Length: 339
Image (cartoon, rainbow, N blue to C red):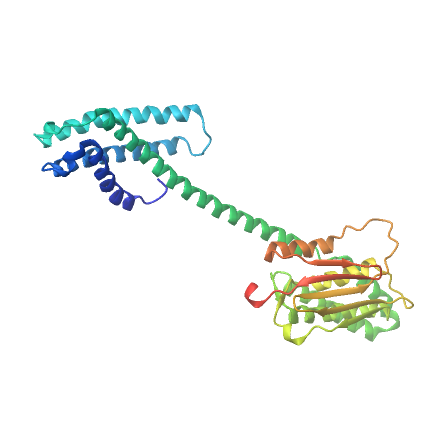
C-alpha cells in the first residue's frame, strides 16, 4: 500500500460498521437485536474493506503511474462489481451459518442497502488511493529535492573550478621578467605565488568561509598584482573587524579584483583604484571605471560565477552598480545562523 494502514483499519472498520448498521437496519440497530445488526454490519464492512484494499494492491502493481485511461477505469469498475457480488454471496452465506435468526432482520430499503454497500467499496478505494497518492507525492518531492541538491552541488563544483588560469600565466611572465634584474624579488614572488595557490586549494572545496579567511588568502594575490603592475594598482581595505567572523563565498573577492584588473586600464598616470569595504549587509568591492577598448566582448564569466554560487548556496542575489566613473559589486554578508 505504500503506508502502514493497521491503525486505519482498527479505527475505520468499526466506525464504518456502525454507520452501515444504522443505514441498513434503521430502528432495529438500536433495538433488542442491535448486537446482531452490528455483527452483520461488521462482517460486510470488513469483507468490503479488505477486498477493496486487495484490489488497490493489484491495481498499483499493474499501473504504477497516474495517467488516466479507459482501461484503468474498466479495471476498477469490473473489480468493484466482482467485490460486490462475491461479498454478497460469501458473507451472506457465512452469516446464515452463524446467526440462525438473522433472516428475521428486516431491511427497510434494499435499494438503500445496495447503495450503501457500493458507496462503502468506492469510499474505501478513494480513502486508500488518497493516502497513497499523498504519500507518493511526498516521496516524489523528497527525491526531487535530493536531485536538485545533487545538481546544485555539481554546478557549484564546476563553478569553483573557474578561477581564471590566465592569472598564473601572467604571473609566470612577470617572474621571467624580474628574475634577471631582481633575483631576490623573484624568490619572494615565487613564494607568494605558491602561497596564493595553496590558499586557493585550501578554500576552493569549502562552501562558505569567514571574511577573515578570505582576506588572509587574498594577501598573497594582492602582493602578486602589486609586484606585477608596479604602482599602477592601488588597493584600499577598510573591512570592519566586527564582521570578520561572518561568512562569504570562497574566492569571491579575488574573482572581483581579477575582473577589475582584466577590464580596466592600469597605468602610472591612470592607476586602477580598488576599494574593499562593508556596510551593514554587504561586502563591497568598488573600482574606478576606466574601461579598456576590448576587441572581443566580455563573457562576464567571473561575475556570473559569483551570482550562480550565491543563488545555489543561500538563494541570495548580489548587487551590481555601474556609473560613469565607478563599478561596484555588493556581496551579501552571510550571518553565522545562515551558514
